[in-house]
Length: 131
Image 1 (spheres, rainbow, N blue to C red):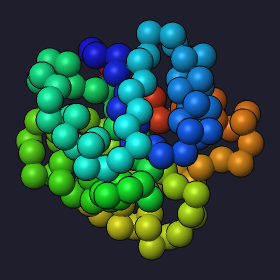
Image 2 (image 1 turned 180 degrees about the vertical axis):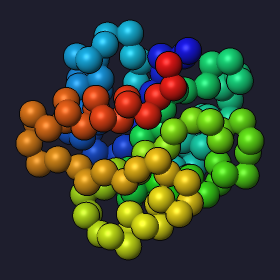
Image 3 (image 1 turned 90 degrees about the horizontal axis):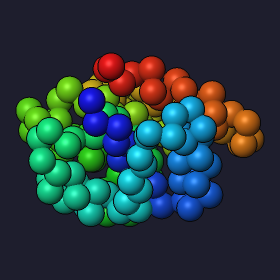
Image 4 (image 1 turned 90 degrees about the vertical axis):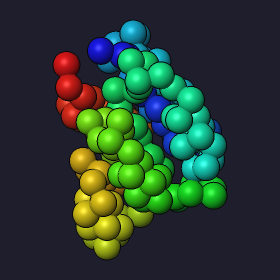
């Protein structure tokens, strides 16, 4: 299994806290962060099939393509279907959550306000990764 997590996130604090949490759980995890939705999809298209990430974490509200729009775009490609996609956001909107889940995200997580919660959330996110 590839130990790659692709993160679509434009907030550098959230990016650093989540990267740090994944690294604390297991330093073998490599997080690649792309702060723009269109560039995220373009980057994913350049990765060879056997190098595809184990997990996609998508900020609901990033420039050019939102997390939900990324999920919608990836749904058109069978090679991405097995990768768990998690949307996360500062918004706890039930409408955003329902839309995300309908499109195929495995979960919708509200970003934590405290640093300690990032570790718990990162562990939860990794629970969707197929060993």
